[in-house]
Length: 429
Image (tube, rainbow, N blue to C red):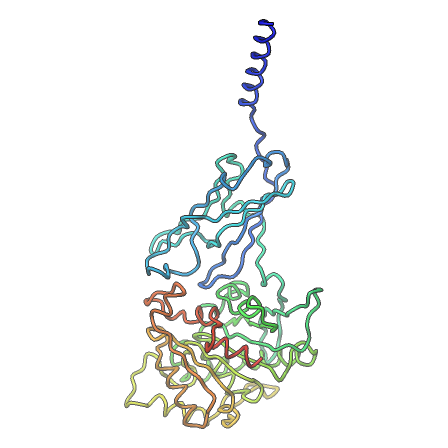
């Protein structure tokens, strides 16, 4: 009996030793998919990473505790709570699920480009796996990116008024995936930072295309890539530059008309918005076609109508006086052969409600422009306009510090609370 007991104990010990020294088969990664979405400040955010391996058994033992993210920062420029530079998440929020040979790793959303270091190279993000270094992933290992909303958009180009421009168009769909017809449309005018850039760079620069769809609003959204240089300050003194601004708008109106003719959007529910240079283009668009749109939101608008920025008033109220005259003057319209000056329908222009938004500390496009637009239209009979000026504390809530408070389109496209510009827009749809 004693001998049998010794042999049994020895067998158990040997089995335990063998088990402890078993080397798990390392994972062989076949593909890495990053699930992303458009961020607020010229960035893309990663929500999840999916890793597919060739050998399912190699990932069977893994848990969330085996993974760690570095260089992963939230959206924005600074911490909304402190105003300090963004730091990596203390808790990555990793949730791991497994489906045979695929690991799905969800985490707190982080910047695709990694951690910003102002004045220094950015710190790239990395997903580290303590259990198997083959499962440690960086951006270089990502084989596919899937961007919510944007991937489902239509991309194309359109020619009119002697120019061709690329566009991106989101159309809402029902539960079966069918396009919903005769919906309202918001056309967004891009900012100068996106001029002369490729379509996807412009589309991913901010949430202009995705804001309404991701809010659950049944609305089409449209953005054109403007393939000419930014029109710059005081461009209103250069007829050729302004003619090109108006030509771009004429092209967009013609494309919108094709959508109306096809029954895709409702011609009675057209809306326009834009920021910075796009805010100025929104103003000119409404001056060209005031009877076609239901409402507009010029955000931190630049000055393609009269010189305002980089200019000193000769007397208090000069900008308002100048705009009052300009709103009763002429714009360029396509006559079938060229862009020609045509009289503005000032009454229709002033009946069209506008909601001006601007950051009080904006040094790129000073807030005086929005005040001047608002006051000049009021003098001419506009009764339904609104204006909201964002203070520094409000901007900080969205991770925007005072030094870059020009980015007022960030709170605009994120805040749908009562009384905001987006709330006002949606209620008219």
